[in-house]
Length: 353
Ligand code: G3I
Image (cartoon, rainbow, N blue to C red; front, side):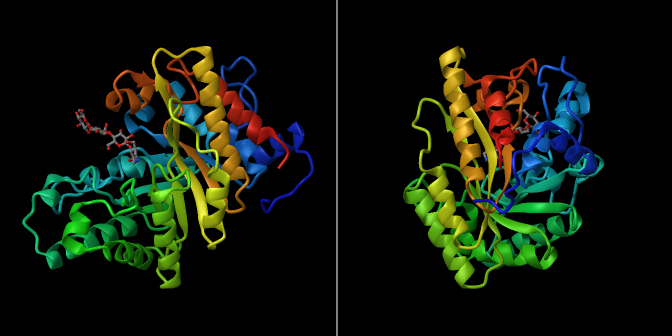
């Protein structure tokens, strides 16, 4: 059961909540995604609802910008806080796009999920092709974490400190970090991030850990061990990249709850549900069920503090570029029309806390 147990939340109460919190009022009834904004509905559960943000779309698409502000109370930069953007050449920094998003979030009463400090992907070539000794690479990583967290200090609610460090079988992923620094790089990353911003919530984040199984068991063992060693880790992010052709994670609530019992926050951090194209009513209904399962699992977990979708419109999804023949993974279609999944999320959030 979550901390907040009010009686039924009326429309009037929700509207006043939205206004008091600086959130957006309900969309006019003619708007495709009409009804109370997701952020307003989520506030009644003491939950923030978020989206990954594509900065090109935010700059150039007024509908995208308006919906990002109206519907969401937390934002995650889809790409612009990654190392290859922030420091493309050693010693040359570009925080401009990420700073824009932080300002946007401030203007719209949104919190920012920082994504991502340590990952094997989207690294600048000067990092991956450098002929580093272990000590040199450790210093490079320490500096990156310190520079980045210090630059955004005070503006980031949750940091994805380490991302996708495990294989499906629960062994640690072979990466430049593991190869050169050994498994201790994970604890070091959390310690360094905490030194740079003691108030940010520090997360381990991964995909395919919604289910119980070798990978989520390995993450569980890791974070339990880190907590026991006094390493400053605050939460675990369940990415939630699902595909309707596979079984949904029926035990997700139970799985999240075991992390909760370790005293950790949890979050759904990158939810989307792809399908083989073309979409049809049956597939869209399955997709809606999968979103609802993830959101309900979060709502059933006492310290699940945010539910973030990895983009909210099919217009800008990463999916078709990576999974040939698949797509339609988001809550709104390419014309920003709500799909059954949007209504399912709205309904779940509108239900009595
Ligand atoms: O910035 C370049 C641009 O200069 C170039 O012209 C263009 C040509 O393809 O590519 C641009 O970079 C692309 C980048 O997104 C920014 O748009 C990369 O090719 C592309 O690979 C990259 O994809 C991102 C992917 O991470 C990379 O691994 C996706 O947008 C992003 O949604 C995805 O996000 C990840 C999370 O960070 C971690 N979890 C999984 C999730 C989905 O893969």
